[in-house]
Structure formats: C-alpha cells, structure tokens
Length: 464
Image 1 (cartoon, rainbow, N blue to C red):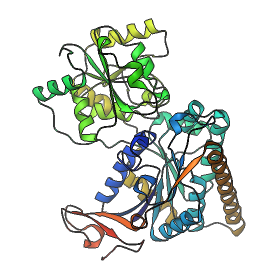
Image 2 (image 1 turned 45 degrees about the horizontal axis):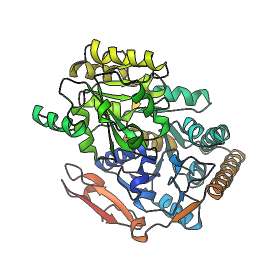
Image 3 (image 1 turned 180 degrees about the horizontal axis):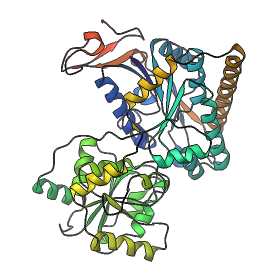
Image 4 (image 1 turned 90 degrees about the vertical axis):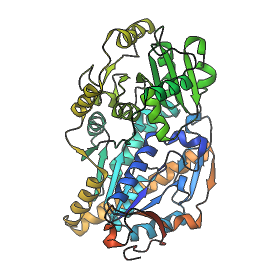
C-alpha cells in the first residue's frame, strides 16, 4: 500500500534543531511508525515541516502563547499546501496523522476523495494548552471540538497510546478504536566497565553505590522538573538530560547537591545507554498520555518512578514490578520521604520482574501501526457510501470544521506572530522505500537487504 504521513515532526533530529523539543514523543513515535510501515513493504510519503516537504508557519512568542510554544510548526492550508495535499491524496491509499493543526481540513479531504484516515492522539493537548496558553479553557474546548469535527468522517479511525487516555477521550464523547504499543529499540547490554564510564560522564564524582536517578525529555514546565529536584532525597543523585525553553541548567545544575543537568538532546542509541547506566528513570509530570522514556528504560531493564496520574497509571500494573509511584503533588517532606523509601528501602526490581510488569501493563487491545492502517483500509472498503443527503450533510460539516480550523489558525498566528518556512521542491517529490528481507516488497521492486530513496512526484512506485 501507499501510505501518506502528515505530521509536525517525524524525527528527533529534524530541521528545527533547538525547537525540536516541541516534537517530543510524537517525533519518536512517527520515526518508529515510518520505519515499521517501510519494513512491511509499503511505500511511504511524509509531509512534515522538519522534512521541509510542506509549507510551514513557525509560531513566534507573544503574550498569548507561552515561550514553550515558540517555534511550533503550523501546517497552514495555503494554496501551495492545498496543491501538495491533493497530489499526495491522489497518490496514497491511506492517510496517517497525529493531532495536527489541520485535522478537520485533512479529514474533509479524506472524505471527499474517499481515502481512509488514521488519526493518532498521542498528547494530552488539552492539558498542555491549559499550561501554555493564556486562553487555556477556550483552546481546550476548541481542541476537542476539532477532533469531534474530524470524526464526522466515517472513514476516519481514531487511536491513542494508553488506556488512561482512551478513557479521557471517551469521556469527551470521542470513540477510540485501539491503543498503540510503543516499539522500542534493540540494543546490546552494557558491560560493567562501560556502565561505570557513562555514570561518571553523567554524574562526575558520584560513587557507584549512590542511587542514580535519570530524567530524560523536554525541559518544559508541564514536566515539573522542579518537583523532581525539590523531592530528591539525600544521598541520591539526579541527572537531567534534555532540551527546551525552561532554564533548567541555570536553575537546577548543582553538583554539590548531586543534581547534574546536561542540556541538549542526544541520539536514541546514546539515550538507551543512559537508561542502562542509571539505577532509576523518574518522571514527575502530571500530563503524560504515556511516558515514552520510562517504557524505553523498562525495555533495557531499568525500573521507573512515576507520578500516579494520566498515562503513567497505565504503565505500572503492580507497584514493585517495573517501578513505583511517588505522589509528587504531596508536600515536599512527604514526597521526599516516599521517594527515599522507594530508592533505599524497597528492593530494586530485577530484569525478569520488569519484563513481567511491562507484560502485565500491556493494553488488552494493543495494535501496531500496520494493523491500524490495514484495518482502516478494510473498513473503508466495506463501508457503504450512504444516501445523498447524508453525504452532503457530512461534507458540509467537515468543510465548516475546515473553515473554523483556518480561522483559529489565522487568529493564533496573527496574535502570536509567525515566520513562513517554504517547502523545498526536491523534498516534496520523495517517497521512501525500504527492502524487505526477501526483497519481495512492492512486488519485487526493492532489492533485498538495502534501503534507497526514489523520487516519484507522487506517482505509483510499483515496478520502478
């Protein structure tokens, strides 16, 4: 099949550099989704600001929008982008997207052009806008209204990343078809010498018997790094690795208190080594739909300490298996004592206990991106078009949602300020293919064991 992905971010190291913190877990997941679809023998085209395959408006700072949103890429519905969308929709068999800034527009195009759409909700955007936008309640209502508007398309399938977030969405009247399971990377186990070397790199001078707690992620206020620092018990070291607009290094880096800050994102193969070098991975955030870093840490045998809210509740089925909960909303001394007991008095879970804990927390209806796409295409093929009046009603509702989508985007960009980043013509033409192990992908069009890029200008790549 030919899959079109439309997303603000598709890699943790895209064109945006220091702004990539706004991508976070969505970027990691879409990198994984793209690779998974390619390995299944599908051809994939990506429309994304960080690939420069579509015109983008970068959000600038203002009184309306917090600094954390500075640089966030809006995919505007310009005439140039509309031509790109129409060309890409004509080429593809299915569209995949996260909570995009144009979900109503893309859903409307999918309905009018009879293309199934897979909408993946990864982030608790409602809570994020409450934290970062002055008119937070209004933005939250508009966010849920946009999803409901997009869902008017009967060929749109909605999935999310945790049972907890599924419940949140369904309370808002949004039907969710499935829950994704995060695909982690395979990596070699570190030797004792390598682990000791990396520990010294992360926390110079800290002894091997001092518990080393790692936070990896964006330095933004909704991550509540200040709570991790305030509740860190004595004789434990905390390492903060990440990037963002919050001045975490200036505010918290203090080796005398065993708090070490390493600003800047690192490649995935490196962060997995950091997970193995740490004794624990911690996250005090109260807005996660799913904690990617804690799950990744579990995959290499490192337990986690999480705040018991949001998607974190879906990740530890039984305390003491793959991690522990600490209520970081409690008073400092209470949270610090709970943190201390988990680090020093409770037995650290073994690798086998962690694996069992992860298995126990696995969603019952877990789906892969391959399954989601195949199910969406099968459902669309078996769906009757309905009566003429019904189709007109849905089309009008989606077009009205598209108009509201454009008006809201213009208001935000007009108040906050923006900078246009045009797409590169040569980037628009690329469709990535990856060979299957047998070379049988795409009717044998690929070579076994190799990977290459074909410029297609949205043509069918079969047989090229």
